[in-house]
Image (tube, rainbow, N blue to C red; front, side, top):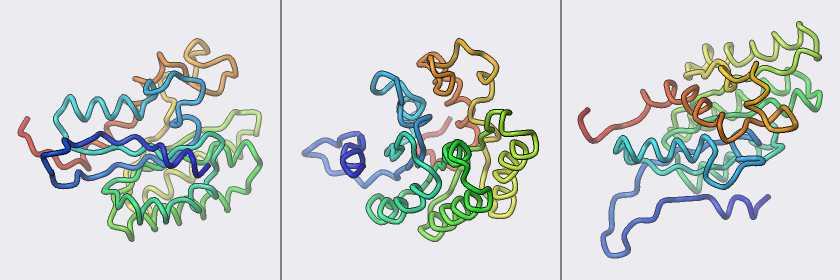
Length: 208
């Protein structure tokens, strides 16, 4: 896993033209953000990097997502990321794997709360990405799982993406063969789901 973090993509600066360090957006996620099963640089995080460039919003994006990661994994990894990258914004896209592994809801909630609070203590703004789990877990669990994202968003005053897979969840053709991971064609939809929560947090240097 350490090797995966060493390959975080950053846009290079000109060697002879020192510039102020650009603010950093860290995406702390799982396979949905880690381009699982996708060609490199086709996932929603890469598309966000391109959109920032196109809109002349000068941010660096570090994708610290790992396929299969849980909220416990993200909680363990965040302090080193905060220290090394000093992000201005942290996008938290975790929790689905907790549900798939039967992690108690209270544990997931505690981990997400700690992740958000640690990021805030490091002077980062946080975007929390909500998820649903498959209905075979039962309606009670499904609703409580999704509900914890809204509760944390209100309690800790962080913007919420209500549902990462909104607009594609009921379209099997938008998922890979496992019916869990979105296809390349779905990635722009994922970005459009996240962007409205992220954009208000960005410092724009150029007038629009």
